[in-house]
Length: 116
Length: 113
Image (cartoon, rainbow over all chains, first blue to last red; front, side):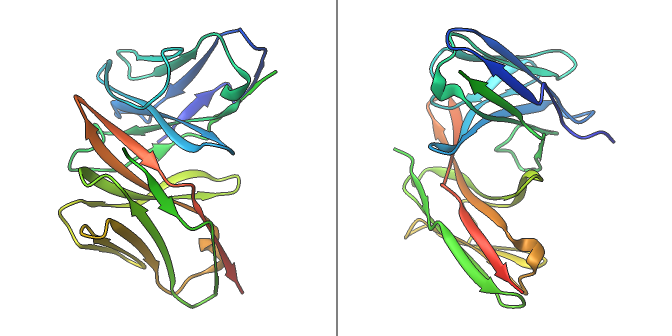
């Protein structure tokens, strides 16, 4: 069974641009969560999607948005990029929504975004 | 608000037990988690505990939860060099209609052969 895949793996953008990151969950998994990891702020939860609906979200500005498609693939979009958005963006998939009785998450390798 | 704190560094000898500690502030947490991140190997959900439990054991891992003191610990028995990694504590809380996960800064575990 293929693991969680994220594309692209590396990305360089300039301030003010926008970026779209993609995450393909493990086959059969319907929940996708996104996280940001930076040296300064550490790991932060962005949002979670299940069955094409955003179920949970963290404390990020509206420039950060996401969506999930009917095949459970998810995209995350950041508009008007700032230098501080440089980070490793991780996605994780699980069979059921997080916070339920079954907590098994599988993480992708991440997309490393550098904003210049 | 939610805040999760953990020490930055722990060094143990191979074969000893490791205990990584974490404190959290939000008493309405539903689940508490331990994640492991190895260099170049990505992030991994190690184990979790539901907030109404005191203890959970999973092979070499023991999670203890003291709700009164808002203290969570992860004990690794017979620590191996392969356990060297950064361990993140996290709590899930309900805020309005959403749930949110807050992470600690991570504890770097160094296992000395």
